Length: 490
Image (cartoon, rainbow, N blue to C red; front, top):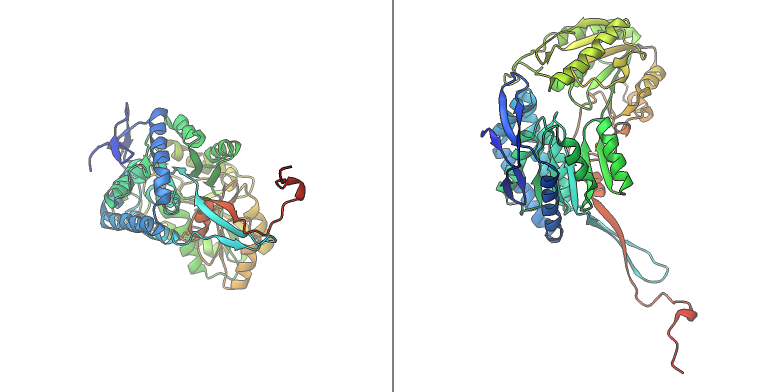
């Protein structure tokens, strides 16, 4: 893979005035030099998307679907290459990288199907009018995607928006510009997506604030799709809201895994191990809090800790190493700070709590209480915090005792009991007898409270990325008041 990467604007690969370096978090080696866009580059990309918008909106839905399916074909054909990029750039375990690259193709196919699902209505009219509700694309959609699942979440942000007739400017994370954007641009180019319909602007951390602001505030941008931290999401949401633009925001989480007294402990251990430690816990849906009933807490903790100790740590290109590196030193320092704070306030480190380089060992804390930072702050790392509960009501109270509300998992042999708890949780998603980490291309994915606004996926994305309009045809049934009617000449 070439080490020098350009931006993709208006169907052409273009340089910026400067470049920035991207490193492999596993070994610190140089991965790529990437175009470092400034505001003028962002404006060129927005203008290209704006100029292409009318023609793309007028393209028959069947043609848009065909092109997205072709893009999915390209992604599938290049899956090994895409997976290798995810391993090298984002520190993804190879198993996760293969899943992610496969899922991205599936998202494109689901979006192709969504092109056929843009529906309107015929409404009754007191005046005999033909009264129609129609949906039409918004125009230019800016998509700002994260580094943890860069390929999949970039694809999720763009796919349905493109399918229903919008054009795109994508800004991938400065940590993962290649796997999160530039390789996707190559796939779109190979699939024959028309020039200007899909554009990628990459920039360093030095320029991200101004470029990001331009992608939201530029008057030709009609909507924003953002996946990332709550702090940045608040800023984007406030700016977009002030400009009366649509914003779909998928933000942070502090998700709970609730293990009830009647749970299958083996299943609970498996779910918690996956839910807490997949991709080093760097997932917005990660189960960062485990709320386990006192009657089974000792056995669950013993078996869970034993299982966590089997997780391999090291080069994520090797299948046995499911725990790869933390994305950068700042993120690792935040994880370490939370763990030490919990320990200082009485939590016990059952395993882990150490690191070497950017590799943080999978860590289990017991005796965690709501007063500790690790109970409240998003960790985004390989740390599971166990809190003992007495009953279902306390489980619900503690699970909801968070500024976040993204997802949850509930473990019980009684499905109705699990569903009753799910109904009472303040989360956008809840999964009985499964981990909070779950997604499918057609579901309405998103959170409540500080976990976001709006929904991605399926018909939810159609609603997000289209405008509803009311159009009528007068057929002679509406009589205007006589004073307004044309008078016969004297």
